[in-house]
Image 1 (cartoon, rainbow, N blue to C red):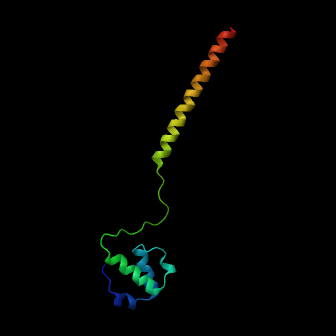
Image 2 (cartoon, rainbow, N blue to C red; image 1 turned 90 degrees about the vertical axis):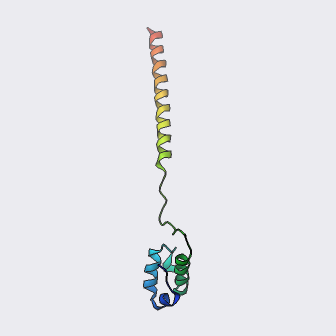
Image 3 (tube, rainbow, N blue to C red; image 1 turned 30 degrees about the vertical axis):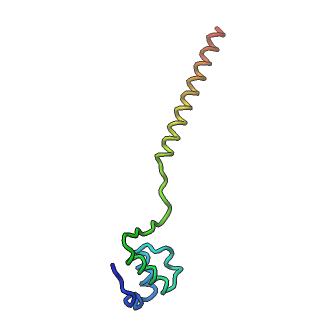
Amino acid sequence: MNYCKSDLEKLNIFALRELAYELNVKAPTTLNKKQLIDEILNITTTPNKKPSKRGRPRLNTSLYDTKIEKTDVKKEEIIDELLEKLKQELLNLL
């Protein structure tokens, strides 16, 4: 995956953009040919550089699950309390 600058200069802009997409260069369609070559060389010559992740990050659903469980428990407690109060009021009426 090591590219030579002279080899990259021989490629047209569309081939450079395609290569940039594969290397996860950020917004390769907005860069000109020289900028694309520089970005590709930076990515391929920098050791252990992780490519940027594209797209929206995933939601941490475990946080939402615990919130739902907590609210369900609270709802059940409230319902139980209301039922007890109703029972007591009915017993008082009788």
